[in-house]
Structure formats: structure tokens, C-alpha cells
Image (tube, rainbow, N blue to C red; front, top):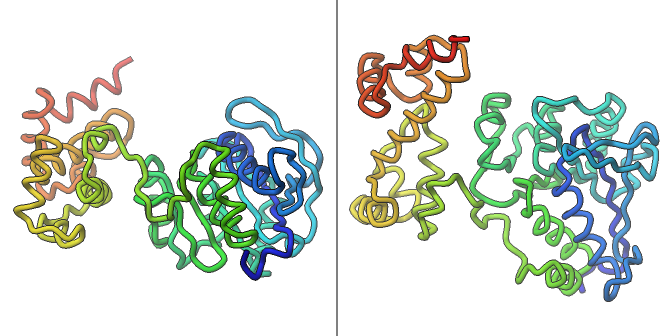
Length: 325
């Protein structure tokens, strides 16, 4: 037990409209299992409340509704306030909840962003200058909206001072266990993890599961290299830089890429750039030259040539198909 073990951990939840059910339920159940001995669910070591400006049920993105347990109160009543994000294109949190989070930030209460909850905190300026962990799936959306906020999409979660953010999904279990370990000791955290069929507490730097192609890569160094490339589509990085970051020689990097993916690092990078261009042409409205620049091509004719070689059609043809009824 550590010095904090004698006092009860108090957690308040802010559920955004269309919140992610698994992020909320997995975090909450980790607290529940750590809060008592066995599976009796008594809130002894941990207590929690679902906060709102009124007592109306809050609908998750899965359609399941959760009823608040307490009206918004003083943020200092809690050790941690956990924001469970919703759909990025969905309704925003009520103004009263946002004001509550602003007060919490001013009082230096620890704030936790689960899944897209990190977007909510960043929109309030509460992540300025603080590294924010988001899922690889939301990385580009976060960078586009908050270009000045440092972002990480390789690890499971990031803890910096009184801000804690995680990628969502099952990574919330490990962030919750980290918090429990801090307050109630390792045995309580491990007890919750064992019941949840998680062998050990994963550190925040443990690698996120990543996009489909990376599933073929078994070597952690190659998976990290792939993440570096994926996050540098607009401004391509050299093999020398990548190799240095993952502590390999260029020759080792190229050999491992070929053996794991059947592609060289440069071929993988170009595949990502062209795939992104294809998606932007299919779904966006940016001019072709702008898409070329966003995908790391300084020369539009070179971009068009490489695109045609890969897809068997021109960028303008893909754009015109989008416009067709």
C-alpha cells in the first residue's frame, strides 16, 4: 500500500451526448472491481458519480441511456473528473458541463479524457502545452483541429501532471488501473485486472493496435516506424530519421520492413500517401493541387502520374465520380 491507500478515491464522470459506451463501462467496472474485496461491488476503496446539469438520461452512441447520479457540484469534491467523449460530428456537451470542466481545470483537479473526451478538453484549452493521447483512428482529426497541441497516437495513454488521456476502447482499463494503483495500491489494481482477464497492467507507452496493414508487423520497432510514417504523410520523413527513432540502422530497417510487410519503408510511405489522396478525392472538396500538397507531393504532375500507376485512373476521374449522381 502507498501513502494514498487510506483514503477513498472519488471519481466524477461527465458523459458527452452519444458517449462511447465501452470507454465508460470498462473504466467504471475497473473501479468497481477494485473498490471492494471479491466481487461484492461495495464502493469502499473507490466511489463514483455520474454528473450532469439535470437528471435526464444521457444517450450513448449505442443507444443505451445512462441516468446521472448527481447534479454538478464543486469539482474539488473529486480526485479525478473523467470526460467520456462522443461522436466527433455529434452534439456537443451542455454548456453547464463545459463550465464545470473549466472550473475543475482552474482548481487543478485531475482531468481524464477517454476516447474523444480529449477533444472536449482540448476545445476548452485544457490540453494546451500538454501531450494528448488519441487513437490512431482519430489522429488526423485531432491534428487538424488542434495543430498546436502535442499529440501521441502510438501509446495506450499519457499522464502529464494533472491531465490524463487515453486512446479509448480497452486501453481505458489500463488507465483506470494506473489511477487505482496510485491511490489504493498495486494489489487492488491487479485484483481488478485479473477479474477482467487482463494479465498485467500495461504501461502508457505500450503500443496501440494500429491500422490493418500494421497487423502483419510483429516487430515492435517496425510498428513504431509505421506509426511515424503514418503521422508524417504531409511532410515525408527520411529512412535515416525513422531508423534513428527506432534505434536501427537504415539497412536493418529496410530488411525488417521487407520481411514483415513485403514493402520497403519508402514504398509503404507512398502507399499511405496515395491512399490518403484517394480518400480525400472521394470525400473532400479541396482542389487537386491542395490534395497533392497534403499528401506530400510538391509536384502535381508527379502526383497524378503516381496516382494513375497505382489506381489505373487519374485523380480528376476519381473526383468526377464523386460528383456524379
